[in-house]
Length: 390
Image 1 (cartoon, helix red, strand yellow):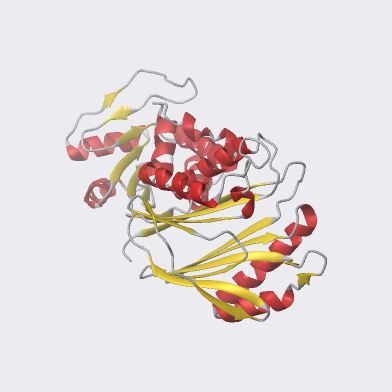
Image 2 (cartoon, helix red, strand yellow):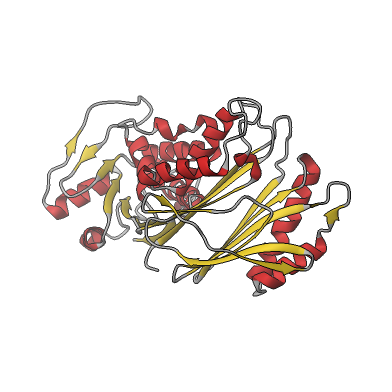
């Protein structure tokens, strides 16, 4: 499958609880992606321990080559049924997505998974199999470009009960909502946050249960090619610019010297804006053929701040919606969040004296540290980064 499997998840805790009773584990290999979502019985510490144990058993066994049937059998025999409630101590959903797009799913007492394709909620044929004393629903199907596969815990389905909605949000209504989201949201992470935002509203900011969403969006690979900092050897200037321009995807240049090199080699003019849209972020510039031209270290540092806010802030106060500003850091952060699955990065190793503490060795320049920090944040966004030092 020549597409990118974009996977994201997020959870919110039951009101008053410090720990979430849902747990998600994701395993990414070259030939397959495995997702485990477990929902522990009850809430709080006990549920968190049960769901963590379930997800860790599944992830570890599957990572080491065990079949899903063997894995499910082990989980079921490890976690007995609660004698009082006659319910499993932890429910779970396991989804395996292979390189060719084929999917195997095993669901045990969790809400059914959603599959949205071409603005339509697809019915997934399922077989019921008994493993141990548990009834597991298994399904096999194939994903296509643009598909949205979503896993939710029952805290999502029940959102609104006794409050905004008498009967809760409901599986069918969630399916319709996901259908609409899939038509304009490219990023799996944005879809997850949108669902949780709505869920939080339905609970009137006091969730009655732990709630988790896992979204899988099948996307075309989107490449950004970024050049920052002049090469250590000036004779490599032309080579770097040729590499930047010959790669498919959007082009980004960060840093005044890097911009001058690109403009010189392309024989184009640099047009610099004098508008300080954000007083903490230097103005952007433009070069014909380049999608975004920004200042270097300061702008990248502010971009890291914005990306960390996006990753760490509560879903109900997602700063992504503040990234539609026109300053360089917001524009760059928005590119990474919305339009990037792969990044080709060319980092010049020449040291700018303005960025160098005289007490530090040359390999600890501020520029290299800032760029390395950016790479770490991008990896949290699941962006595949290819680094080239010049």
